[in-house]
Length: 285
Image (cartoon, rainbow, N blue to C red):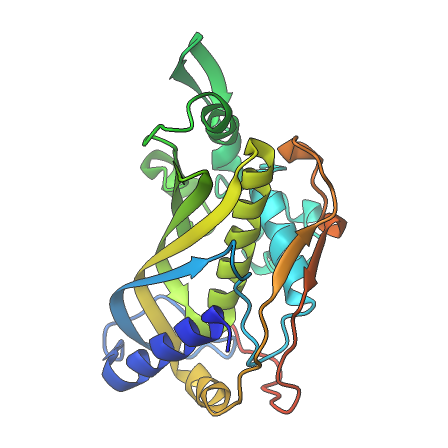
C-alpha cells in the first residue's frame, strides 16, 4: 500500500462515516442532468507525503496516464502561466472556458501578474513564480516563500475560483518542502490528481534549486465526496492496494524551470489494481 492509498482510504472512510450532508443547503454544484450535486464533507483535513521517499500515487485504480495530464496542467498553470484552454493537452477545463477561450483571470493568469518585490538586490518587478525561484536560489532560509491565487479583487473575473489556492515553500535540512492549501477537494475526481501534480512540481523546484525532495503537506478546508460518487468510492475501498513504491524520474537535468516538458517525466515502480474498474466518473460543475 502506498502512502497515497493510505491517506485516501482513511480520509474517505472518515467522510462516509462522519461527514456532514449538504442536502437542503442549496448547493451551487449541479450534475449534467441539472440535479443538485450534493455531497458529504469533513472539515480541516491534513495529509502528509514524503515525496522524496515515495511518489504519492493511488494504486486502487489506474493512474498510469493520469499522471501525464496532471503534470501537463501544473505546467500550464505554473510554467506557461496560461488561462487559455488551447494551451492544454487535455480537455479538463473546456466546461469552464468563456467565449474568448480562457477561464478568465484565474490560475495561471494570477501567477503571471507582476509585482514589485523586495530583494537583496533592491526592488525588482517579477511574477510570483519568478520571485519564488529567486528566493529559492538567493534566500533559501526565508519563511516568506508563498504564492496565492485567491485574488479577491479579481474573483468576479474568474470562471471558477481556484480550489488549490496557496503554497508555502520551506527549505529544511537540505530538503525542499511544500505546503499546499486547498479550499475544496473532490476526493474521487481530484485528490489523487492534485497530490501527484504538486508532488511533481515539488520535484521540479527541488532540482532547479539543487535541493533534495522533501515532504508535501496537503491542507484541505472542505474535503468531500459527492453523493453519486459514494458507490464508486466504496468499490475502491474494497479493492486491494498494490505493494509498490513509485518514484518519479525527471529525464531532463535542466536547472531552468521553464525548460521542463511533459515528456521529461517517467514513473518507475508503479502498478495498480487491474481487477477494479469504476468507469467514467461523473463530474459536478
